[in-house]
Image: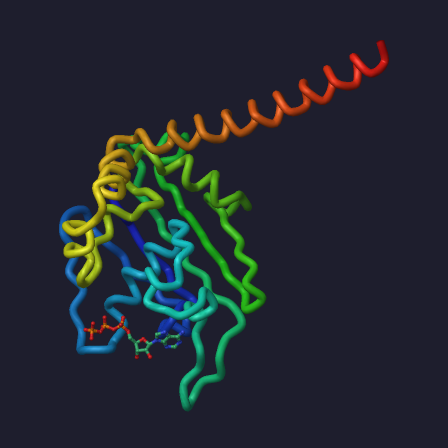
Length: 199
Ligand code: ATP
């Protein structure tokens, strides 16, 4: 499994559709200061579901949409597609290529797709959570990020390790199931109250 290509359209400084193709192994992106190298990394974090504006080096989520330049009007939406080679089947889906798309409008509304089929962010997180590409972005180490990992609280550091080991997904499912059980217990209590009132 490796990242095959990244297509950006209206994302930060990439107003026109731009596709970067990667090969297996190490890829270096070089360019002058301010030319958009970090925006490429932000796009990978964003398409995989990053929800924090700060993590994307902005003030609010809409800041990822091309804001315009002197010669070009602002755009109304940002779109990024990440294509992942899955010929080794590391991602549990019967396709040898998986493309993940995220689209965002100025209204704040987001859309997600797996291989061009609309889905929820949760579906993307579920699909990728055991593959080493995940929501906590432990695979993306941005400028200055290494320091924050080293100085993280023990519980945060544990969360990075749990995600890498694929445990986080099951912890989240357990929390969801416990919440459902709580709701069910409340319904049962209410039912018991009603039956005892009717007796
Ligand atoms: P450095 O080498 O200094 O770290 P870099 O190549 O990583 O620079 P980036 O930080 O990726 O550069 O890109 C910064 C550029 O992106 C700036 O020119 C900024 O104006 C532009 N930019 C960021 N967000 C937007 C946006 N929403 N619309 C238009 N341009 C944007």
